[in-house]
Image (cartoon, rainbow, N blue to C red; front, side, top):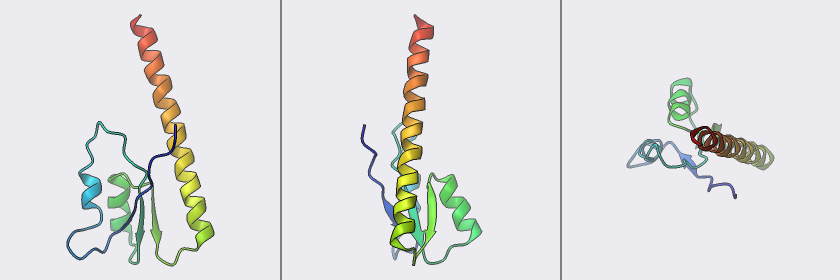
Length: 97
């Protein structure tokens, strides 16, 4: 299975807060990997982003190598979560039979 699209969001948008679309993702759907990029990183924003499902909050001016490392780690975490979910589904089916 391929990794889902990794959206990058800026928090400072003219019309909406960058976290608003993330908060509207239905709970039953598989959420995309979300990496927030901001120029004003502070603890309250970071906590809010992480609670809303962001995998990472980065500060603008991140170098390309660090960004690629972050993406690779995020995809690896997602792959592990997929494997665990598939195993849990398999075990539930087995328990019902």
